Image 1: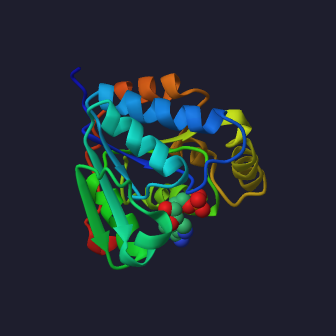
Image 2 (image 1 turned 120 degrees about the vertical axis):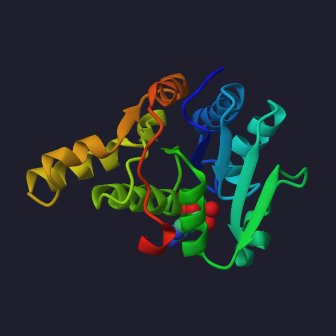
Length: 196
Ligand code: AMP
């Protein structure tokens, strides 16, 4: 399928969360990205939703590029069956910079504090005009609702401009996220890593 984007970073939990919906969404996202011919860029782990997205993408014949700091190799255990590329970097900051460089768009799937950190950082970089790459938040089982409420509260209280709402799009389902990615233009600006 012809697609303007080449690579999509997925931020998601190193745990699977409760219930089955988050795991099902992670698998559907990995499969869907691979079927659309999109390379998955992710944190390189084999645990939690991270592992589910990566394994599903690989099983569907997709390309997977993991970026993991050396000190997390033990805790986040890259999938034993491997991935297309596993890059070991010296720090968390290097991981985020590298994932940014490798990706044309970002999807935040359910996760914990690390996922929120990655989502907020990529949004603040966009707010500062360092890039215009599409950012999506997937709202599985209401996961993104408290974040949306926080953004609205910050807009109401004058800490984020009204245009802050346009920094990212909310997708209610994996299918909707994939459709938004299909419709996204190739971003034309990205800061050199030295400015991040
Ligand atoms: P979590 O959502 O907390 O399960 O974490 C998801 C991923 O984000 C894991 O690969 C974590 O290693 C990673 N992570 C945690 N903290 C940070 C951080 N400060 N910056 C970047 N990634 C992080």
